[in-house]
Amino acid sequence: MHLTLRQLTLFEAVARHLSYTRAAEELHLSQPAVSMQVRQLEDAAGLPLLERMGKQLFLTDAGKEMYAHARRIARELETLDEAMASLKGVRRGHLRLSVATTAKSFATRILAAFSRRYEGITYSLDVTNRKMLLEQLAHNEADLAIMGQPPEGAGLVSQPFMENPLVVIAAPDHPLVGEAAPIPLERVAEEVFVVRERDSGTRMAMERFFAEHGLQLKTGIETTSNTTIKHAVEAGLGLGVVSLHTLRLELMAGTVEVLEVEGFPIIRHWHLVQRADKRLPPIAQAFASFLTSPEGLELGHSHLPREEDLGGAAPSD
Ligand code: PGA
Image: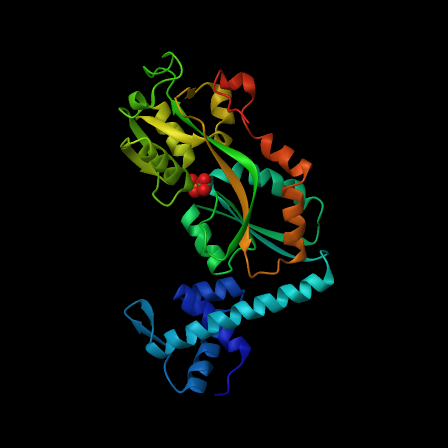
């Protein structure tokens, strides 16, 4: 079969998006240029790879086979690119960082400080939940991820670098505010909780915590956003469990209160995670060193609420 790497790369993007338009956008090419290359690949294969039914594009059986090979080849090409970049040093390149929704506030700060040191580098910062982060790492779509502890056996290496305390929040006029501390967990479990989506690390940690104490969580509104949890709690729709890293402004403004609940804060840790089989490009190595340096950690901690805003609920080290 006579085909070119370019045809395969373009086909991989079309098959991934199932759209010529989105593939063309991603590759900064015109749509006719992309479809022409894919047609040439179909000619080389001697079989149709894509078929259109109505408005929807589908992969044929041959297309699925070609896509599996094209993905592997695309990954190899990225590894080759990274190996060459690493021989050139950190003067140019692109850092693909993906972070958990809950980590975005401090991660943005750290990335901003880091990027001032390395002009000539471009950055992408993707913000998503735990499950999607694991998928991105599995598909080599991120160099590094900042997230809770990844599962064992997923081909990943991780380094804990900072605490992530999860606390219970309530509206200032909630009956539990002002209750003698520590408030028994059984009492809190009688309340409805506004929760994150099932694929969130925060949600998994709180469910595990209540289950370990033999308690069933009463869940109310479910949302993908920590901000919505805080607004819903403030509006009186229930209690919430959120990371202390998301609470600085609300505690300063007094829109929600941290409850001193038995067993809380749940102390999780932020991890810097990468694929075990990946040779990091030099810019990603530089970012990993910066994040775990005293300066990086200081920036991470500077996003936590101050002691005086917390009242008595400061987590112990
Ligand atoms: P999130 O947090 O997925 O709830 O945003 C990440 C984590 O704690 O693992």
